[in-house]
Image 1 (cartoon, rainbow, N blue to C red):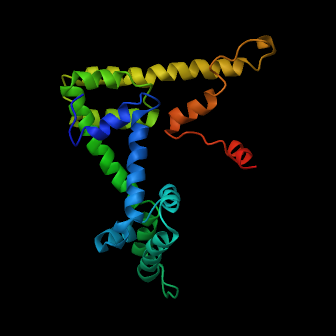
Image 2 (image 1 turned 45 degrees about the horizontal axis):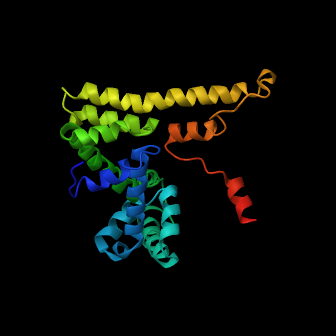
Image 3 (image 1 turned 180 degrees about the horizontal axis):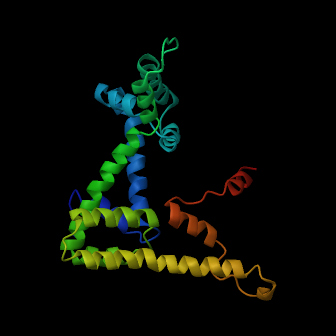
Length: 239
C-alpha cells in the first residue's frame, strides 16, 4: 500500500488484522488526545479556554489521570472548576433560577474536549480510508482481510460513506465489503453464543465447547466497541 503522511496511521491500524481496525483507530486517537492535553498543551491559553468550556467525560478523565501527572490534572481541574463556580453556579444566588445558566450546565455535562478531538480525527481518517479504498487495490485487499468491524463503527463508517465519502458508483462495493466484515462476524458470534447456551442443556454433557467459552465477552465487544474487563480476574492477579 502506498504510504504518505495521511496513510501511515491508517496502515498502522489495519495491518494487525485482529479485532476491529476502527476501534484501534479510536484508541490511538484517544491516547494521543489525553497525552496532548495533560502535556505541554495544558499551559497553552487557547487550549485551556477550550478545556474550560467543554470539560471532559468520565472515560477521558480516567485516561488523563493514568497518562498525566497529578499536578497537570489538578491544574486543568482548577481552572475548569473556577469557570463553573464563577460563571455558572455561584454560591450565593437570589431570585428565580437562571434558565440560560442551567442550560449551560446541562450542556457542559454532555461535552468533552477529548471526544471532540477524537471525533474530528475519526472523520478525517474515514476520508483517508475512502480515498485509499477508491484508489489503491492493495488497500482494498487489506480492508477486506480484517477480522471484523464492530457494530458502532459499521454504522459510523457507512453513514460517512453515504454522505459523499464514497462515489455513488463504488458505494455498493464498499457497502458489500463492509457488511461482510460486520455481518460475517455477527453470524459467527450468533453461532458461538447459541452453542454456549446449548452447553447448559443436560443433553450436551460431554460435548465440546468449541469457540463458545468467550462468546459473551466477544459479543459485548462487538456490540459496544469496548472489550470486557474481568475485574475479578485482575484482582486475582494482584493477590
